[in-house]
Image (cartoon, rainbow, N blue to C red; front, side, top):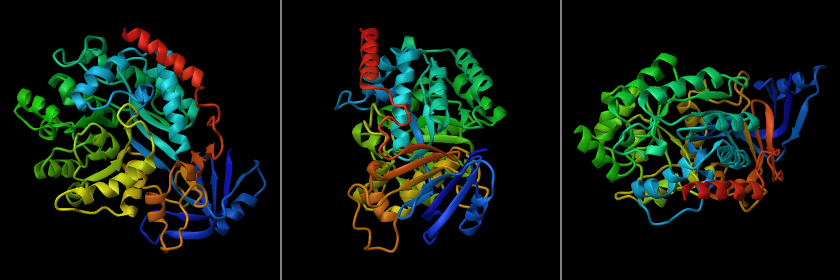
Length: 448
């Protein structure tokens, strides 16, 4: 039995703005919070297995960050070409790179991305992998200890999918079934399989219908992209006569289990469909800016009743897997629109934590209370360049506007410390520079 006591931290529960408890202990057993305050201290004092203690006085303790849209297969494609729109970037850089992966290079890519996430306070990810070698992703996730939802990508349209990344609908769904039988629910439930048609551009109608049916039958997350670029929308409308979100809704892909990345070019009828179906939208501000895709109408989505989470997307279109960057940009971008709107630091922090957890279906809303999962990030306001923090009684602005990965003191998943400040290897998970460069050289050779 694992036992953990976080001593004397300031607990930010995020249920509302006033949910702040100073100098408070938190005790967990076997990955579940069992006691807060004096009750936590009492439970930790009961004789039994050794208790790991984390001195947290002066630290801020909150639910862990959730990367609700990620491509770990693209971590080795970081620092790629500039000046390309979505479809050109996919065709020239991403799809050739993904096709060049073998099981070993994909493992290095996943380890590099997961170590970056853990060092940034991320406790859960929704990862859109690639078509093949998905076991490498699950093995890396198991090694990391993170909460991982992901699996193979479904791409079958012969007109829009490169031959070396194409799998028929039957082949793709059979691989998803194999992964579900092998990995789903393993490692104390931290590993889960998602159904992942890449987007309507590369998916035939039979594949999209099969994905929707499989997700419903097995109660799995359905993860896709939609309405990211105008070129994508034009292709879908030319093929179907419908807008992107309308097409997905028509085929039954919008449900409470659905996570749709981007949703930039959409209108009020799309927002209503997303809200009615209880689908989640994942906002990826850095990626959208780098690819000149546009600005997600977050304020309008939220007013329509749509849950909005945050993701970095892949390192190929972001270069940083950093929730702090995404939170900061998420609050600033609405203010650049005409007319301007606003998103508070507290709202952005909830998007990066509580809303992401709900989008991934990780159970009841994360709480710093007995019975909740012990998935935490501890922040040190005195590290880095976030001081002074004395101008407001609330810590949320300091976290979103001033903090960065250098402020992460510890990342705890399932009651186990997976990262501590100063651990440059992230528990040995992070590949060496030689491993990374060797894997990239192999991929480049395979692309020639």
